[in-house]
View (cartoon, rainbow, N blue to C red):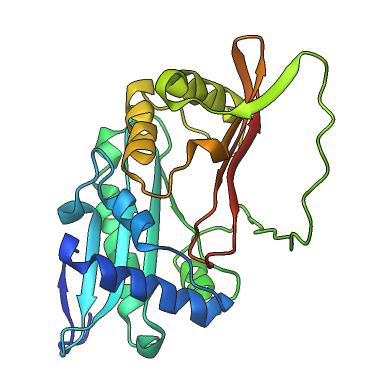
Length: 258
């Protein structure tokens, strides 16, 4: 049970800045750097099919400060669910993470009847390796460590060398007006053998991509590069020049070859 000094409710759009501050405070406390910008969080909350009222929980202290936040990602075919739990460093060790983690599990169970019959439903939580308390808690709840991801970085003191391309391959900027569907098809094809890949209805995937392209102010199609062979997109490098880490940090979000 959560202490009576805290109140719980779904997050609201008016909480956006407070949730971003909370997520970044936790990230700074664990890895020394902020994690997300307000535009990124807004994009997630405004994603087609995402409902703040059922997909989130916010924990507030007695003074109204938002000190805990959880989100449960669930979409068709409802077989791979993703939970995120964040607690402000000043409130670690007070049972907030435990409460929100259990909420995420309870919420995830509601998706099981929606999955195809006989298919395994999995709930994932991703936590920094430095968050020893969260790792221990999840292991105590019988979560299994199944994958490690590494964030790699390089200081760009000078431009990289020009790439040497195979004959017939050209790299150029993506053209949003005419290539949205082709890029989505190519990216799905490139990642269909990636760990954890789940095939989703194409129209839903396309709607999500269109949302990010049209509603994210940091979208810059000149930084979305495609490799083409004739008229076919055979690879992509989707990049951003604005991330939560700071204004001088660029990010390769997706890199794939069919």
